[in-house]
Amino acid sequence: MRAVRIGNFSGYLGDRYTAIDEALAGDPVDVLMGDYLAEVTLAALAVGHRRNSGGGYVAYFLDQLTPHLATISERGIKVVSNAGGFNPAGLAEALRAVIADAGVPLTVAHVEGDNVLDELATFHAEGHGMEHLDTGAPLKDWGVDPIAANAYLGGYGIAEALKAGVDIVVTGRVTDASLTAGPAAWWHGWTPDDFDALAGAVTAGHIIECGAHATGGNFSGFLTVPGMLKCGFPIAEIAEDGSSVITKHARDGGMVTVDTVTAQLVYEIQGPRYLNPDATVHLDTVQLSQVGKDRVAIAPVRGSAPPPTAKVAVFAPIGYEISQMLFCTAPNVTQKVALLRDQLRAQLDGHVDELDVTALGVAAEDPASQAEATVPIRVMATARDPEPLRRFPAAVGSLYLQGFPGFFHDGHAQRVSEPWPRIDYWPALLPSELVPHRAVLEDGTVLEAPVPSSSAIEPQPVQPEPPAPASSPGKRVPLGTLAYARSGDKGGNSNVGIWVPDPAAWEWLRTTLSTEGIRALIPEAKGCEIVRHEFPHLRAVHVVLKGLLGTGGSSNLRVDQIGKSVCEYVRAKYVTVPAELLA
Image (tube, rainbow, N blue to C red):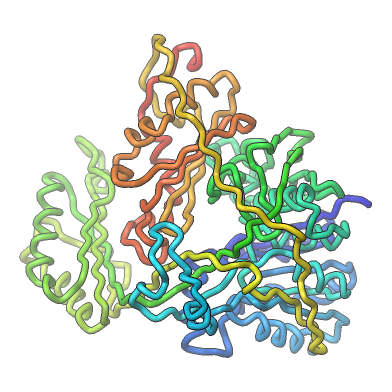
């Protein structure tokens, strides 16, 4: 059987609205796949679903898809998306309504079972502590009331729906890669025990799940990317053995190279063992090769049994927050920021729980313009209740004539006046058998997702520290002179993958980026546990900085809330590079 061609059209809620238009105007695909549910997106949807139980799904997806229903029907394209959010059944019904209005013969199913919020008390009573994956604390000790708890499902609910002839499958919280692995399993008829093939599909799914991330978007080497103005969306061609080729629509901008694929491969992973509900992927076996223009082959990929547990994302409101961006101009920036902090504390201490005043950047020496002399300051306050935070706008506004010299805000931006909810994240595990996983057809038929015959706990390997770097004449230059990097969030942890395109630089990179080398480059990680691994096939060093993002991207006070720029910060740091590598 030929490879299945799965084209991505969304990497997050807010991705290009025209993506489905572009995908249908591009190269042929068998399946269109859209991913909308980042952890911070789930947090936002949880608040909306609490206010309106009939909502909770991504209406944006419905609007994108509706104009193209006739084309999708004519071409026999399948559509799979996790846009169901907290209400996949509601989205399925909404889709059926617009399909009926369009008069096209398309069928819709939804996948359910991920929403376990109503079962939390039962789980506790049965002795399932749902301990926090980083702290080990039991969920019952959190001290707040969860508003959402969703388990990460695999791809076989999707596969069963497609096997039944369904055209459009919408899900809630499945893993991002399941949106690709499910269609591939259906297309090739894989069983849940085909771990190597499934691992290959999960890997391909991980590459394309974030859309233009794989075609030059958010890529350290963006200066080399053609058509960067509008990078196209990726396509995975997945063969019967699970090997794949990553490509893109030929008419669109961007590029697919070993480096753009590596960038996504090392993004938001835990280490060499990539745990998924369908298979455990041994990422240290993955090899990439350029096999044509905008074509990167992925093979081999070794897989093994999935873990016996399902990851559960629990969200709860922990209070409110409010923030304002202010500006100060050199000289004496440090003293001006300190005065601002002291003046706000004098008015807000005792009323707010946290007050954060963060200067961003430094002013240029002998600035050529006022812009070069100006430093933004992000001011933020949090409290358990909204009322105390209503003091914040008045406190900030009172300082224009009594604060530091040159105090101003962006006069073209609307000033904040009301606080907004602050949502925290709790990652936990449950035995997989406690999490139902089924597809529901339009007539109410329920299809249970098949499960593998075995499971296994695959801890991350412990790798020795590298030797000290070889002593040789060198020059101090930014790490990014030789290396690319990509970073992201895993709850309260930031992951960073750093690699070199030049094989000659691999030994230098791995010895330079020891655990202590990483700690020296990132002073903010001083109090973090650092988990370090090497990927020799990719010439990459991967680290997880535990706790750098607080307890999660939706609740920490960092300006780079989900750690997307940690990688570029590391690339900006100076390291000693041997002269022969610079030559």
